[in-house]
Each structure stands twice: as structure tokens, then as C-alpha cells.
Image (cartoon, rainbow, N blue to C red; front, side):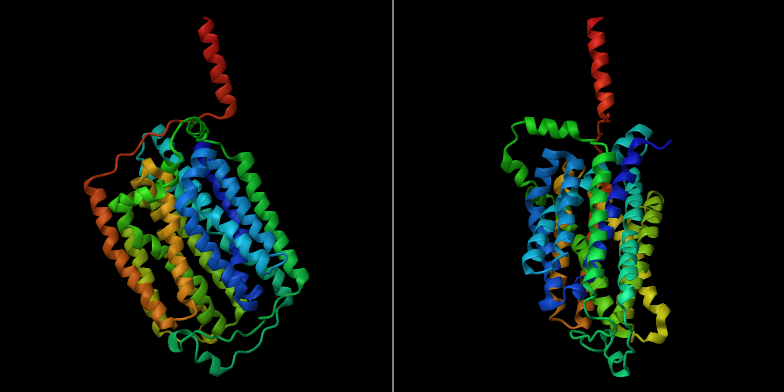
Length: 464
């Protein structure tokens, strides 16, 4: 029999898997589905800008008032609204739903991280284990299941749109401009670059809406409300509104959080580079747009497997060696991409880079989330809100210069941020090694039936 905490981790993971099977697949198609006047890319920029604004204020307010469970459900509803907006894409449907998604995105992720951290600490207390080890293990399981959404989302789009694909040969003069050889600002896409038939689009978006609603049902029905009592007590308390409203900014007084900003922003830079620059300037340019889905499936599979693996072995190796491995993998890939001239005859190489990138991203995601949960265990909501805010800022900056800078300079910026991360992160790790953060003891929770039974028992004892 698995523990209730482990069951809850599986429920959260399956809910996010279902939700991001829809959103991840839809996100990767925005530049082609809604290419008119750059509407699709603009909607993605609005999403991450709204997440930054949301991260400043909403997560502590929503989590403390609603609890983690219902904050997750509300955030998922915001993501589903974006899928609905893609049924009839236009400026008046995509931009408002992008804002709604962005506002719900930060509370969703902050609540998920808070929930996993609480569950890990509760389980560690029951088993007499170190809290950080169990939290690392739970984040590894979550990202193992969650990251596979990249496989299923792209598989759905490939199967549905594959019926409408027409592949054209790519001339040699185009191949000479692929990679960092040319500026890479105006890559001509070959193959099927026209919008697919409306019937196929509706079929795909309708499927995405269905799995998004399924995600909400999974969380609402099967997830335990582990912090219900804390949320109820908070609503009944007289804590000043501004105290909760400004919790995200107040945590910036902690020098450790400030030192982790480069690491957190780098997560946004490296994810946006693979999904935007690599797919456009290497895959689409040399192979055609129909290969993008397969490449991202390789990334998702590698990310998923490595998330589980590193979540398990972190207790033996510690975080620092894993971060070093991720930095080395990303740096090696970035240097290789500067000199590699992609060609269709080198098909396996196109999958090597996303596989290595997925391995590195698995470390960045699992270990950074776990690190935030361990360092700021007493202010988890504000800490994870800061995480989403700075990571989203990395996304926004990368999107902002995407259409203005040549690919070569984008790689240099990526490596510069990585080097800054390698310099600043060890400072926090060394301080934590010398002065370990004392883990807080999370109170065990009971489900509704157990609570009622406990109250009945107390009444009986009182009568006796």
C-alpha cells in the first residue's frame, strides 16, 4: 500500500500531465497556427508578462485563502480558457485569454510546489527521514510524469495534422543559412506552413479542451485538501491584507533569494531557446516544420526519464554535482551549436541536442524547485511566486530580443547567463552547507471522514 502523501503526488502529477498535454502542444503550434501578424507569438509574450504580474501579488493571497487544492483547480481553469480562445483565434480572443492564463499560471505553479513540499515534509516526519530527501524524491516523480506531456501533446498534433501535411524538398541555398551560419532572423519555412483545415484545427483544440477539463476533475475529485485547516484559520484571522499582498516582495530582503535570481532566470532562457530558436533555426530550416513535433517529443522523453532518475539519486550525490552536470551539458551544446551546420543527412544529430537539453532541463527543474522549498520552507507561497516571476522574466527577455538579435548573439547571451549562474549558485549552496536551514515540522492531516470520526471520539470521551 502506498502512503496517502505519495498518492497525492501521483494525483497532482497526473493532473498536470493532462493539463500540459493540452497547453504544451498548443504552445508549440502558435507560431504556425496563428502566424497572421505574429498573433500566436504575441499571445505567448502576453502570457509570460501576465505571469510576472501575477507572481508579484496573487499566489500568497490565493493559496492562503483557498488552500493549495482549489488554487490548482482555479489555475487550471485559466489554462483551459486559453484553449477555448484558440477555437476562434483572433486578437480579441487570444490576448484576453492569454492574460487570464498568465494571471492563473503563477498561483497554479506556486500551489503545486507548496503542496509537494508540504507532502514531502509530512512524509519525512512519519518515516524519520530527512525532509529535503523526500521533497527531492517527490519533485522527481512529479517532473517524470509531467515532462512526458511534451510527448503526448506533440503526438496528438502530429497524428491529427499529419493528415494534412505536404512535404517539400529544401534547396541547398536554404541549408547554407541554417544554424548560426546566418543571422537566422528570417528563416524560410518549408513543408506545410499553411494553416491546416479548420475541421482538423477544431478536432485538435477540442481534444485539448477535453484533456484540460479532465485535469480539473482529477484534482477536484481525488486530491486531498491537506492545508484546509490552515486556509480556514487564515480566513478567520485578522492578518492585514497588505501583509499578504506584498509577501512576494518582502521575501526579496533575503540575500539568498537575490543570489538565486540568475539561476531562476536561466531556467527561462534555456527553455525558450530550445523551443524557439533551436526548432526554428535548425530543425525547421534544415528538415522542415513537420519534424518539430518529433524533436520536442525526444526532448520530453529525455526530460521525463531524467527527472525521475535525478530525483532519486539527489539524496546520494547532493544538488551541486547535478547542477554542475546540467551546466556542463548546456555549455557543451551551446558551443557545438555555434559551429554546427545542420544538414538533412545528419538526422540523428538533430535528436542528440534535445536529448541532452532535456537531461539538463530535468536537473534545472527538479533541483531548483526542491532548493526553493528547502531554503524558504516557512514562506513557501512567496518563495515559489518569486521563482515563477524570475523564470517568466527570463522567458519574456528571450522573446523580446528573439526578432532583433542574430542567433550567434543569442547563444552568447545564453552562455553568459549560464556562467553568471555557475558563479552565484555555489555561494548559496556553500552557505546552506555551513548553516543548514532548519526544516519545519508539517502537521499531519486527516481527510474529511477521519476528522468527523475524531470529533465524535472526542465528544464520547467528554461524556465519559
